[in-house]
Each structure stands twice: as structure tokens, then as C-alpha cells.
Length: 115
Length: 109
Image (cartoon, rainbow over all chains, first blue to last red; front, side, top):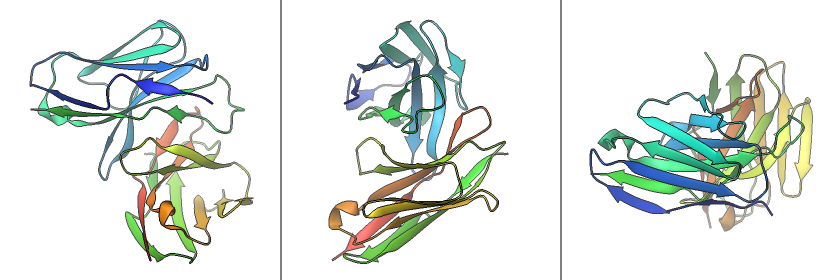
């Protein structure tokens, strides 16, 4: 079974703090993704990565950065947390190639609250 | 622009059948996914359709009409554990996933 783990299920931070969200997958997947999920808005892609040290902006990258130093680990960084970044953050991974019909595997999510 | 539309919330009775609709507008199309997400948990894959027609998987079936930009998820013999949000997502021409906001399904005894 594919396993995607995230460092925290719940996190509370203060405005202006630097926040690190870690994601690790154990299936040697090339692709990794960071989403945020807010009520009524669905999943919105923040950043994704197709390979080590490679990153691409998603739909809402402002206020975030990412790091992928190892294949299994994809980190999301909030340089200076703001209250509008309070959200559920979901990490996902998928194998390379378009023939995989079961696409993305998700981690359990991190519910971040910024006070 | 690219867009996925699905109802916000639906209610159904245990043992009944429910159909959750999804319409999509994408730049190109390479298939449509349905995911299930229980409250506070991660989405889990249910189905993938790329050709027109009905795909059946036990109590769950998914239908696609590419010409109409339309899909539905059909859940039969509803159980209380089916209470969840159901997310529709489409692959565009670049294999980027475009997500709908999800349909919250409430099952009543």
C-alpha cells in the first residue's frame, strides 16, 4: 500500500512565523503535490514537483515556497504565516506517467491555524 | 477558464440510490476521477473514466459523456458509512488535475 505521511495533523502558529509542513511518501513516486482545501473552494494546487530539486508553481503559489531535496520528501514552507493561510493542507504523490489510473495518493492532511 | 461544477450538498436515505452529477469545462480532456473524502480525512480514489459509458465497481458506478462534458457517480444500497464528500476532478490537456469543490452526501437512517 502506498503511504503518504505528513508531519503534523494539527498545527497552530502565530502571524509572521515561519512554518514548515513536511510530507514523505514511501512508494518511490516521482510526482508530489501540495494542495490547500477550504470549504466551498475544493482542492487548490499550491506547488508540485516532478523530480528531485524540481518545482513548479500551481494555481496559488503566493506566500508559499517548497523544497524537494530527496525523492521521498516534499516540504511546504510558509515564509511568514498570515491568517488567510489558515486551511487544511494536503500532500499527494503519484507515479510518473499518464497510464496510472489511480493517480494521486493523499496524506492525512495538516489543519493549520494561524492566529 | 477551466471549471468543475457539482452540487454542494445532497441528502439520501439508507438503502436507497443516489446520483451525484459533475459537469466540467477544461482545456482538453484526459479523463475524469471521483474521490471520496470522509470528514477530517484524506481523499481516496474511487473511479476513473476516460471513455464514454458506465464503469461499475460494486455498489459504486461512474458514468461519462465526453460530448456533454458530464459525469455522474451512482451509489446504490446506501450505507451510513457512505456519508462523505465526493470530489470530481478532471485531467486537462496537460494532465493537470482540475478539482470540483466536492458534494457533501448526508445519509439518513
